[in-house]
Length: 210
Image 1: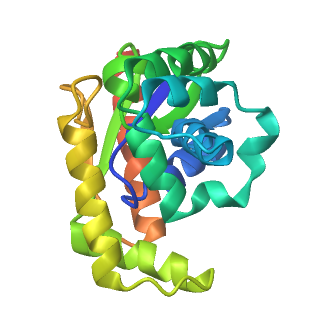
Image 2: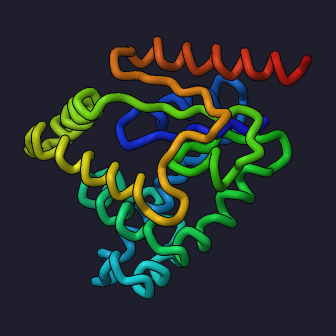
């Protein structure tokens, strides 16, 4: 079974995807982490994420970079969003994602274009979303815990900019697949959101088995 979980930053898609993987006994891939690694490598190389050549060169990042805690920062997220606009970067990472998705037994992948591009044949497609206000508050609390002093207003502004960039890019824009179940987590707690996602997968799995 392939489960595709898409959605914008701080919607809860990563937490939900990990929980689904654990519940159904499937391997999980946070595809956004691959793009963050590219963004981080561009920075380490002293390159420009808006330059296609620099961004493509960064796709050869070492596997160890995926463990770098800097990948979770807002700065790296912004670099990743810019680098992901390039066709060459998306193509370079596509094969890695597709291979993971089609492994025997299935997998859970979360990102922004899993259900529409990477795994359009996924058995279950979820699109996890939430309001800007809810997402900004979640990210603000996470960053406070890490000692980041950025204001809630700054974070909300960054999220709006990233959403606009992701939704309007020419290739693989952020959007819900036509047959995706949309899950709005704005007023949900973590346990409630996970339970709703599990119920959605069970319901679709049941229909597919009929």
